[in-house]
Amino acid sequence: MDESASANPLTAKLRTIADLSPRDSATLDRLVQDVRDIPSGGTIIDEGDRPTRIHLVLAGWVARMKYLSGGSRQITGLLLPGDFCNLHATILDEMDHSMTALVDAKVAFVAQDLLDDVLFSSRAVTRAFWWSTLLDEAIVRAWLVSVGRRSGLARVAHLFCELQVRLTRVGLATGDTMVVPLTQEQLGDATGLTSVHVNRMLRTLRDAEVIDVYRGRIRIIDSSELRRIAGFDPTYLHGPETGAGKSQHRPRG
Amino acid sequence: MDESASANPLTAKLRTIADLSPRDSATLDRLVQDVRDIPSGGTIIDEGDRPTRIHLVLAGWVARMKYLSGGSRQITGLLLPGDFCNLHATILDEMDHSMTALVDAKVAFVAQDLLDDVLFSSRAVTRAFWWSTLLDEAIVRAWLVSVGRRSGLARVAHLFCELQVRLTRVGLATGDTMVVPLTQEQLGDATGLTSVHVNRMLRTLRDAEVIDVYRGRIRIIDSSELRRIAGFDPTYLHGPETGAGKSQHRPRG
DNA sequence: CGAGAACTTGATAGTGCTCAAACGAGGTGG
DNA sequence: CCACCTCGTTTGAGCACTATCAAGTTCTCG
Image 1 (tube, rainbow over the protein chains, first blue to last red):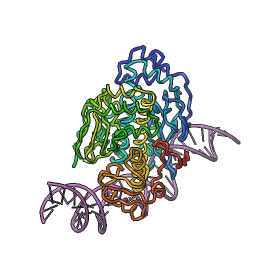
Image 2 (cartoon, chains in turn cyan, red, purple, brown):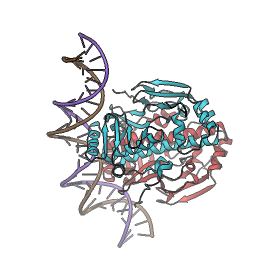
Image 3 (cartoon, chains in turn red, green, purple, brown):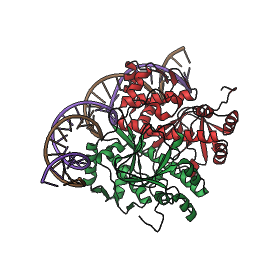
Image 4 (cartoon, helix red, strand yellow):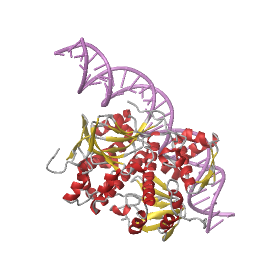
């Protein structure tokens, strides 16, 4: 959208921790060649497919999801603009989950060779890509912690805290408001809850005047209270804004 | 233990998918220089620490764990011999979780430079390391699916199915029996259940004559029934033994 | 043999699920 | 412009899976 700077959200994201030269930035733009529009609900790659390209989300939201035989499903990751779907997926035989666009999305399809070229183009870029990979892993682990050990209310709150940080990094959230185009069913699939229960947790957060939800737009009214409810410690997002909220863990037994 | 072949469980694991030359195998052994004994319950690296080395488990079991402020904790990964704790962790500022030995363990501490040397020593090794990294990610995601969408019984069963495959790869399980030195509380921390409930699920599996648990040793009596209960599809472990159980997912909505 | 850790089991409570129905908003065709 | 249809949200009632609390019991090891 902004033509003066790079329109590449990946650059914005990597700048979170890396000092990218204009040349690095230009190199990253080389990834954006084969851009495809994926309509809302469209599949980018399906379980069982053999991956041949790497995917980079440029616009819209994409979910990593796994369907179970009973018909239920779990969203194991939300990919925002600037996020990759598996940097080296082409090494694997077949996909064990699928990637679906949750809203109309733009996705760059990148050949592994091109990716490798870019990846090793400079020390800063290599390092930034590794950071990005480790961040993705950290996010999945944080989700596992949420789903395994937090209450429904805390899970929903925690997801919002995370999204606020991630969206801010790519310029998609400013201040206290962000667009979260997820249905309550999708929120449930991401947090391991049912849509009915998500609805009740949202109402609780609204009644407590912690957040305001209106038409896919979330306004965080009381950020510190939201983080308290969530037990949110941004350390795992490994950014510069981490500061403040250090964890107070205490080993047991 | 077996002096004739490489005593390096990493080699055994990577051979699952890679054709490693004797030279590759020797290169991998170079990682095993600074080996430390970690007693049961000992911490390898703690939340908040700045990682300076990569860790490779050689013997024993190690858990990735995250403590929450309420005192509860979630195990987000079980590292068996041959498993790395974060190939490039040194890129990150500080650990967002800790690594603890669940039994007496031997862990190789590897400098990032040495690791990089080995990593790029041959095309086969580079590829094998990537496979290993992607596998780790896939396992976390599978745990997330379990905890988010499976019943307590299925979660416990699924973990056993996974461990059976992983232990077999490094020669620690033969046939239907494996040593699983986890307390019921630790099983609970891994599956998002309480120790009491784990106990009941184990009893259910035992009463159904699906598994036999005795003194930290598990014998799988009815493998296909265990996999049915778990909804286990080994595809995510991306090995050659994947074969048989293809998933039958059916997208919804 | 004693002490502590881990396992078992029972009773009770509660968080979150299931089933059901009504309501609201957006889109489409008449 | 309105009827109608669909998808998503909202709310209620009842239930079930899993947590919590509380003893016992068994195992392990010094």
